[in-house]
Image (cartoon, rainbow, N blue to C red; front, top):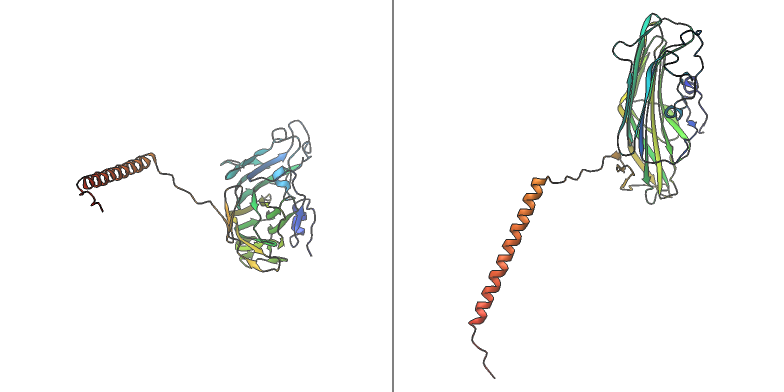
Length: 367
């Protein structure tokens, strides 16, 4: 049974690890585009001259994080007003790779008798996503709202031709990565997909919360513990492949495939460490198509609006057609000119010889 529910935050997602998490689809027509989001927040929210909870309210989640149904949000009043360090970077591209990076610098952010160090990175290419977030926090618990976190997300959206003859379709993704925590810190990594404007299905989750660890992925129709990952107290690492639901092929001539990868790290006070490293890539690695009788068939290859090539083994860069340099073009033109001259001279010689032979030929005898 496919479970589809709205996750309202980190704890909700942790509780729903074993089910397909379906969040509201983003509005607007999908186009070939990559997006990368990186966010670091550090400090104890407050305002000079105000009380400890003067900046306790949080605004809406950034748009990039909304598709994952998680993210702690920021004080409505903003970074500067609330005395917080860090920042948000959002980049996008309609033709290639998007990247985003945020960190607190080499000295970190000192607050609560300690230091918070944090870095977040995200890179999105069509069908290939990377995300990593790491942090440590040596401060002491304080009043008000404390922020010691890094979050990042990578999203790719491409428009593909519907494979001819496909009645149903299934995608496979190879996921490589690792995560670790110390103390009561938390790490959360999610991967999801969406076809057209349909529901967004989370099909991979890697969760670390103190001593509790799990890595689960969708294998066609059921969630399973991924055997390719090693799970220990406070750490996970490995590589495995997850598969989407085998769904009815889109009815139109084209369809939009959107992929999203999220990594968040939340180091706890008093020596907490949280690292999520999925920078070895999450990659579209297989496409299976089936006819109306359920038989698998090879659809060949198709080209997305991005220019990327998609076939049974996943996504590939379009082959590069080399263009000769100017000097090469000049040599080629000289060569063509030389060949033309030789041909012209040969033709002239042949015509002259024929004319000479005809001039010495004896007249025909009359009958």
